[in-house]
Every structure is written in structure tokens, then in C-alpha cells.
Image 1 (cartoon, rainbow, N blue to C red):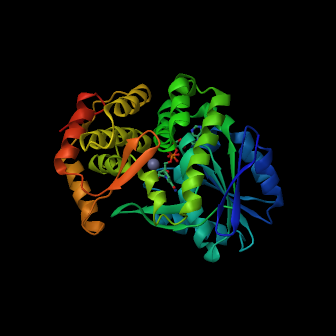
Image 2 (cartoon, rainbow, N blue to C red):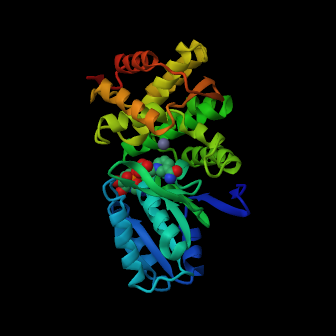
Length: 361
Ligand SMILES: NC(=O)c1ccc[n+]([C@@H]2O[C@H](COP(=O)([O-])OP(=O)(O)OC[C@H]3O[C@@H](n4cnc5c(N)ncnc54)[C@H](O)[C@@H]3O)[C@@H](O)[C@H]2O)c1
Ligand SMILES: [Zn+2]
């Protein structure tokens, strides 16, 4: 398989996609001294792996319970103290092993530990493999909002062992697939056709196909990150499905929908908006709807429409009076628009509710 990597400024970040732990152990052994932050749920399933890691050159291992509350500055301070007291130094390498929460937090610890040390991402969820581990965005939450504190700090390597996905609960798999549908819409017909053909086998965790789709997704994200590492322009296209998705998450206090599920809702709502603004053909809308329906679970959780609109208005205040929507104009094409009306959003949310993905309150 062709090695994959992406470039930011003068660095090349290798992305190793396989089904063994050897590359991880090779990196651990070559590190002067390793600081490891590991997702506690993952660690409780993969005990032998954790024991193996602890035996490499006196690696310092910190267990971390992944929750959005724990993705906090307080936890950053705790981890910094833990590592400082155990002789982790500027030339140590930090390993972030876990889902997106662990990766965001541990990557941020690496970014600020003595002004920044090297780190290696080892994503263990589908979402972390296809999205959060790639691109160097790290950070934590603040009471004011999610991901409000952070940095761009590129890892030295990203090591993906897709066999870890074998133990991932189905709802977490669906979350990763939410981002994958987004990539398919951004990427074009080849990716989209592949997903249409293979979603059943992906939902059944066909190993080969999972590995293939992880690779296709990383290749898609890579294009945006290489063009726009600090998200000043085209990287914002990766927010397709996220404007409405984030508003739905916020309107339900991040307690009802997982991020990827909210993205699936956002993809339908934003495609509906695009169709009603005559930007997207009904046939393309139907294709996007068709695939999302197959992947997303039917839900009847209540989502207060006023709070969704309130959240979008809040975004408007924060972002100089305009909410920018990334809207699909076809499979493989998007446009950024700031003239979406409240009625467009209300109609789209009503459509999503009528389709059974949520209940409006
Ligand atoms: N930095 C970025 O660019 C970026 C992009 C997208 C999302 N994110 C962030 O990612 C986070 C979500 O990540 P996530 O969806 O991976 O959630 P997560 O980190 O909470 O992981 C989901 C669950 O899966 C468990 N888990 C991890 N690996 C497992 C395995 N192999 N088998 C069984 N269980 C396993 C975890 O313990 C957790 O309970 C959010 O905080 C989001 O803000 C960041
Ligand atoms: Zn996302």
C-alpha cells in the first residue's frame, strides 16, 4: 500500500494505516522518553497493549477518562503536573492514544508542555482516524463553548491500527460515518458511489473496507489541510454539515446527539437549504438523503427549534454579523453563503423532523 503523508509548511507528517501495533512500538522505542495519555475505556479493553507500552523505556502512562467535561484546562493542568513530576522533558515524545477527545486534549498538552514537544497521535475511534487526528487542531472546551481554547500543533506521526475498530460500539461507528458522508459529498462521485455501494459492509465492520474508507477520508482531508493549514480559507469547507450540526448539539446541551449524529442531521438540513436556494438539484439532494437515512439511526429526541435558531444567531454575533454556511451545490462541489434566511433553516429543520431524525419542540 502506498505510504500516506501530508505536508504543512516544511514538515511532512506520515499517516500509517494498518492493522498491527508494530509501528506504535517502533515509535515508542525510538522516543527518548515517552509520555502517554491513554483513553481509559480503550485501555480497559486492550490491557496487554497497555502493559506492553509500560515496559518500553520507562514510559510514563496517564489514564484519561474521555468526556467533554474532562476535555478541560483543569485536566490539562493535571496532566502537565503529572508529567513534570515524572521527569518528562522537552525532548520527550507524547503519545495520544484514544478517540477524538483524548487526542484533542493530549495534543494540546503536547502543544504547551515546555512550549511544545513532539507528539504522536494513535487514534482508536473511526471519527478520530478519519478526522480529528489529522490536521493538527488540538484543544479543550471552556464553559462558554466547545473547543474554545486550543492551538495548531502538528503531530510527528499518526499511527492508525484499524483492527481497534473491532471493539468500537455501533453508535461510535455511526459518528465516524457522519464525517465520512461529509467527505463523500465534498469529494465527488467516486467516493460517493463507493459509499453507496458499501455502507452495509462498513456498518458490519468489514475490515478491509474500513481500512480503505479511512484512507480515502484521510486523503480527502489532507487536500484541505495542505492548502490551508490554519483554516483561513478553503479548510472551512470541512465544516459542511457542521453549522446546523453544532447548533443542534448546543441546543440539546451536548447531551442527546453525538457529534457525528448531529453532523448527519446537519448534512440533510444544509442540503435541504441548498436545494431551496436552487443551488442543489433535487436528484442530488435525494442521493445525499438516501445515504444518510441508511446510516443515521431514527431518533425521536426533542430539539427546541428556538434554541437552534438562537445558537445560529449567537454565531452571527460572534462572526461579524454573518453566519457562513457551507452548502453543497452537487456531489463534489460546495459554496460558502452568508444569505441563508431563518425561514430556510426552519423549513430544513421541519423536513429533518418529518423524516424521523429528531422531534422539534
Ligand atoms: N481536532 C479536530 O480537528 C477534531 C475534529 C473532529 C472532532 N474533534 C473532537 O473529537 C471529539 C469526539 O471524538 P470521538 O468521537 O472519537 O469521541 P471519544 O473520544 O469520546 O470516543 C468515543 C468513545 O469510544 C471509546 N473508545 C475509543 N476507542 C475505542 C475502541 N477502539 N473500542 C471501544 N471503545 C473505544 C472512548 O472511550 C469513548 O467512550 C470531540 O471532542 C470533537 O470536538 C476534533
Ligand atoms: Zn465534525
